[in-house]
Length: 273
Ligand SMILES: [Zn+2]
Image 1 (tube, rainbow, N blue to C red):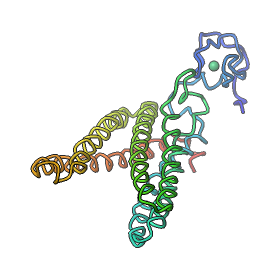
Image 2: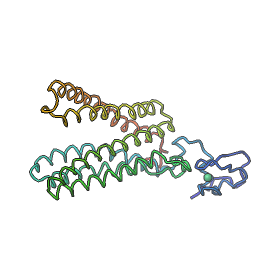
Image 3: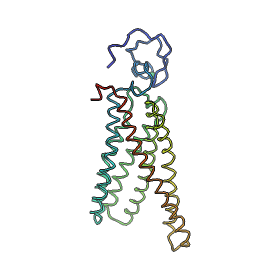
Image 4: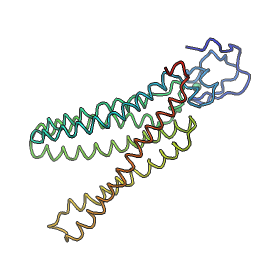
């Protein structure tokens, strides 16, 4: 769909393709890049989001709204799940169902920019990393339900391992999503939101990682094999790490809320209604 107001005359200035960098000089504005096929008109504007496709921006804001609502739904489903403590499969299925809205929201937030700017040629983009992590985390969550359903001691032990792996993959996904938000915020441009996103890409994995590094050995060693003081010391410091982790997680949600409002401000009034 090329803009009918575009001048069909060949470009007279050096214009790199936004996706692959090919020089588009000499091509008509209504044409496509001979290297990667993206529309020439995408490369004529700056990369500010106000020039981006409104339909894509709408998809991003819908994704952000679903992620924010997904938090509420997933907390409710977690509470509901505790009613089914005696039926682990039911409990885990309810908790998993509660994450579906969030998962769909992340899927929408990681839709590619039609101009190709979120996917530079020849590089794995953070958008793709976020999507792959989303897919793997979903499969692992389903696998852990199946394993718990098999109801043997060994399977339940593997299930715990699978859950741990799910947490790690989800963390990778969260960091990739934050980096994507940082990139897009810079295109509004809202450098305050970009800086916040980049800070959280470090703060969240560090506090979460310290929690696991400190708590798991303390928990695994148990009071029988280590002096109680050792277990308590590392256990308590590890648990303390959960406090900044939760604060940063809330900061992440506030960031998504403000980022969504900032994108809505970039939408043309007609398309925004
Ligand atoms: Zn190209």
